[in-house]
Image (cartoon, rainbow, N blue to C red; front, side):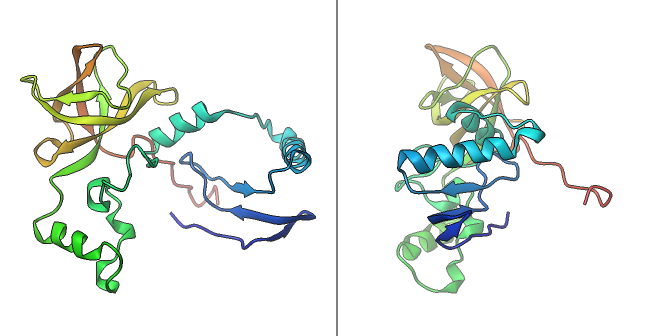
Length: 208
């Protein structure tokens, strides 16, 4: 994914604004950073909704954004990433170039790499029995041993499935591996699936 950033400046007559080409839903999107006063917020909201009216624009809340980012397997700080999770575990090593020289934490990451990689990895889970995996729920092997935990989980409205992200040991990360999520003290079957759960279809030449 490429990110296109605009520097702080004046946009549509508004000073101290920033438009970032960084959608957080798995689809094309923009984020608009503006001063936090009520008048500016109201103006931008009204002008954006008016401009999108002919396209059927509809506002949606944080819950909708969260299910969309989960379907696209986009990490959320405090869930899939934190100061106790390294980039190899999170599957974000494409953003970490150790060969470019030392930086804060590079020695620790080099040791992880030299040891053959992380002991756990972030995986996708599809809950195959009835139940919704939620943040913090334990993941178990089929013998009932705790092996990991769910970082994010929810019904996926677009996919019509119950899905989750979880950290599991390397022995359990292959797609098709069967595990169980402890939901209300009951083991509910799930299986490891490839990430992302949803990938935006590529445009054909006729759509360009």
